[in-house]
Image (tube, rainbow over all chains, first blue to last red; front, side, top):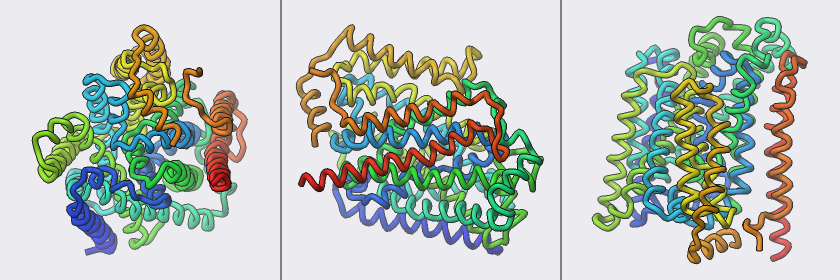
Length: 478
Length: 71
């Protein structure tokens, strides 16, 4: 057995062990809070690393470099700068009031703020649709990593990795996801930064690397490979998605207090920026010089590892990519599972079954979603990052306006919320699936229409609910 | 009475600053000026990615210090 495989197997065993230990801890408690939000006891630094790991997916390690290699550095930075801007928006506009709200998912807030059964069902369905696509992109990252660096056929690699993370998410819930995310976050950050510094030292420093890359491939640093509206579209998708993305917002609920939630979002952003800038400004330019003609751009980091590094380093790199994939996919699986067994069926299940039976149903839901995503990932998309960014765009198109208006605008009414979600989602999906405009610009139409729907709906049929107003006042005051 | 829940002035300033800062690169998106092989647009985005965390963390630290002084 080669050293790469030994390192990867050791890493996967550690992840499953954490899942089992967390499962034993979770069994001691009789509360759903322990499963979904880790008992709301997670500290700032641990939560920050978990947030970074949840966001920095296979897309961020494999996909970000593939995107920069294939579509140029400016386009990639436009997309990821959007995510960086999204963090302070989440920290200032969402983290404190939502943490004070004290529930479990973003759907909990929306169905409290806009009390109609429609909200519960539509939001859960939007999350399921969007995250299923997101999970497929992550599975491609796992598959091609094992394919390129371990020589395992793509389908087998995807199947093995999918079963590993389904197992530990279904057993351990949020506590398992948080602790494995911390391990995975450190590993990812270490491998990307170590690779960046190694290449900086060995290839003559930052300006030499960029100058050489510019001579070898001038298109790498050029703008306008795509229309301007595509650059703006992807920036807006991520800037508005971070404050409403369920697997990020669930971390806000796990924080020990509102201040810790805000600080952990910002610390996560620092880790994330270091990783993205290292990958895009150092690793990709060198790869463009050394490996100029790749068929599948998403293979770039893996091919660089194969050409330039020893088997031990390659083993670490595979584990880091698997970490990136798993840390996001487990959070996505948990969010999907909560969309079904908490948001869609929560009230029914709590009336009919005990906490232990509901835990088993959660586990079954994780398995079903994981297996559906696994089947879809046997036919993978071309660019991982653009694929899942478009899926995330659906979330921001539907949920950004109702969430922010629901938290901050006192006049936001149930009718306004329903129209905003529907108009945002329908506009986005219409443009995505028809040739009316490019997919990347769908968000530029969906968000203004969602806002317009919110304003018209709220003035057309205002709602006056004293209980909601008092609770909102408390969320902003504590 | 305002129709909005109050947001502290410093946080309003930060959000406005980040939004204004974010629009600047997009004003330069069509320029072909390059520095070290990268378009000006890309360098401005790099600056946003570095400045945004610094600004918001400073604000949070100042807010925490102010809160502890009050207590």
